[in-house]
Length: 449
Image (cartoon, rainbow, N blue to C red):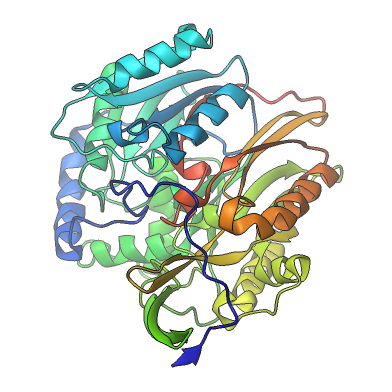
């Protein structure tokens, strides 16, 4: 049992929204996911498939349209920290961005939102998509599906994995596709949007969900002679998601610890702390989604694509803290090295590891105060913007230093930086800014560069 008396108690300075579930909550057991994966290898043949699928980029092009899921608990209570974030974000996004909001059809959530957008002269940019009350909406809009354009005719598709860990996620993509008149495709593969980032001629995918796809398709995925099953799987991801972009996997060759609880002493009392939240046994990712520690930043003047990778060691240096073993800095370094070997220009940015305490229960939960989980818009070489979550608030005032350091990293890359509200309420549930939206449509990037 370790003695953590030197670390201060960090209480929430914001109201805890009990309904805000963890970003990686799982309803469907692994056995059920395997059954559905096999079934989809048969059922997907009845869907209209895009002939030349192309993913919506994660950074390149203007933010023409975005999707948000807004459960009723986002607007409940006058001092709701989640609603403070949404209001701030909606006001600071470009005035040409369309908002597609999935809202519960029952209750007054839609009316409240309409009143707010009307008061801010923004209602003409909003389209509502009502979700039946029996479907449990969550704020994590990024993961449910991928938006794919068929380059053959310019039509758009909602492409989903064979299953969703969170049962309601299956329906949000279904409802959105019906409301927008888009074709919906089910694949026999497993993926989540937060574990996939799309560049101009490549897309990155966290290796853990590639492994999940292989395990789910056990007995179905039969490698051809002299080919690895993993090579066949990569071809399947390209077939369903993007024909032309290069498929790049992200992970570490080092051992990555899984989630664990341990006891420690604080002021003479026995406490419990949770470390490496949401990491599963055998993971090769330091965090369960790559968008929590990797950000795409466009091409430099020499034509190499720039990728930011979070650095917990750098964060400790900025904060003047001793580096904790919990921060697994070598694992993040190893991910950075892998991307460098794939010919990316890797830029490191501070990634603080912090914690939130619940003294009444004598519990401490560790999480990453991630600035990598950001929104990026690259319209041209000279017009680039990034929206960054911030964490230096209340009990976490000390994180103002890393907020500012991350701002400086982006400014050196030529980006206009827009800092947003306090994202600690989301981050303690393993998500942040990039997790609560979905890019629906982007404009073409200017070719002047």
